[in-house]
Length: 461
Image (cartoon, rainbow, N blue to C red; front, side, top):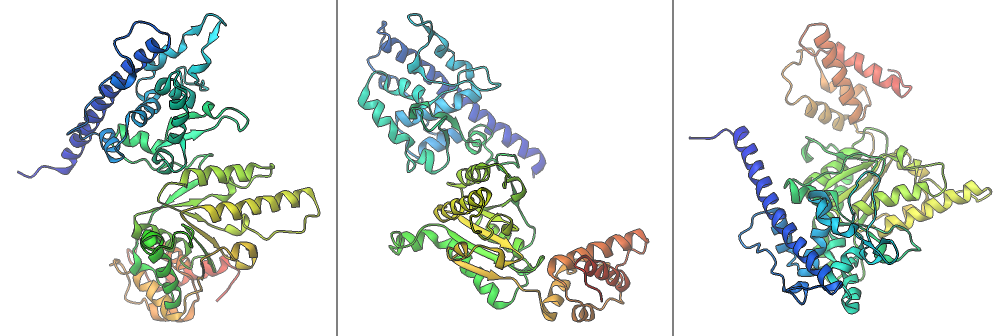
């Protein structure tokens, strides 16, 4: 008997949650024992162990949880496994860290060696690198120093975006760094579902998706060649850099500039590049990035780049001339700060190891220094008569409500419209047909829609 997928899917989700919860519970119990032993050893109390390494770790053999998969994937040692569970505990069992609230009676305050920080709302103990150092190293200075390698940018914790490391202040001890699990891995290790970041003030970007495919993209052959060139890099970057031995000569990442009139396919092309390579494409909302306050624009952009650093994302800056504009003569303090912002962006984009696409309607507005750093500069022109016909035909290929009087060839020949405008015309005509209860899209509806669309750009028939 065939089971209904709508019934099976919730059952499978429940099984995943159960397994994840069971494994995390076991890991937290192990951590609590480690913590009690560390306290006993540190304060020289009676203890059955001489080191926390003697405490057996829970077996993850034949464990199908996401936590077990992650630990096994990276073959984590005891230090890495402890650091991981420390960052998970505030989410799943915050009371397991209550031991850190005891005070040093000699100074009537918390033990500084415990580290930790307090959230604005969260009432529990939140770990820092100092907390991890105390648990893992105790009084062992060499172990404390070796612990720093776990926070190196090349370590998988940082490189693959598992941990979210935030230094409270540049003039404080590194061990005061806040430790937390990234949102992506929190969702993966608990629900088993990969999390997509939501649009927030700290992440002013929207995930771009499309139901279209490459056959729906109508561009001149030269432009398509440029797009295929970019796609080839995205899908073969590792082979080019490492297998060909070019990693010392060529920097990772790719920077492209798309320019041309509105509606000519720039956004769709970015979406399809992500779709074909299974990479998320995020469109950056520049209105929430650019700030009139000094230093805020750089801070906002740094937040985006930091979150995207180790992800397989494509960053798409639409209407980029609003941000990446030409530098001006520094005649005022505002000019100097604006130029500093652009210089910062130049450096940050060049160092970004992923794919960055800037889109603009006016290429001349982009600073020349940016142009030199693009691997591809692609012009998206207005479609010609034959391309317009292809766009019209593609848009209507699944529509059975066209009136016999429609002549798409004639419309394509007479009216110069970009693909985005053609979609707007079709939407208008479809609404008009329903409103008039004709249930057929006719030539007159299309022509009226064309006139409305031309007027938007100040053009007439």
